[in-house]
Length: 137
Image (cartoon, rainbow, N blue to C red; front, side, top):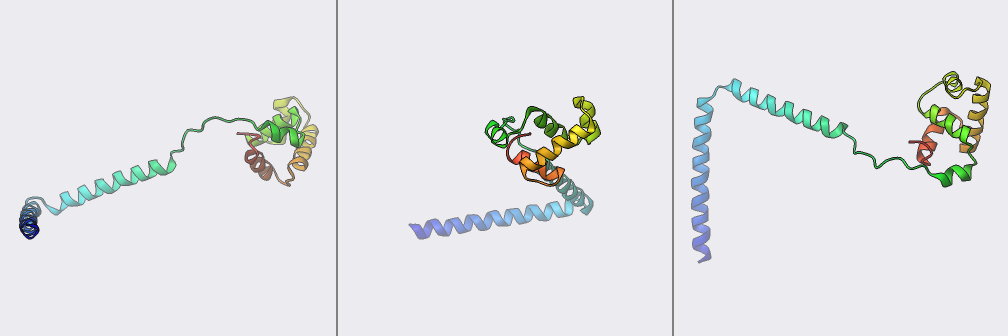
């Protein structure tokens, strides 16, 4: 019984293969090479758009939640937190001073205090560490 099923399965598979081959031969003769090139080009373009879309989309974040324990353990003041937020927004010392109504020297003092509390030396390091500690979004 199994031998019969396998034999007929092979016969049917061979017939399907022959029909597919004949259909392929018809398509090759019926359509010019330019159409195949255009179809392949469209498929690659669509694939490129899809891959680009998948690589560039970011999942929606659940929202930012401030890590109050880290803020309290570092001893950051409210003014230092506001300066840190402006720093993360990419503002210069003068822009931060203007936005918060402070003198540039006061901003420098707050930044020096932030750097010491976060144990960093540069603005970019401060922003990175603050994001790592979830002090800023």
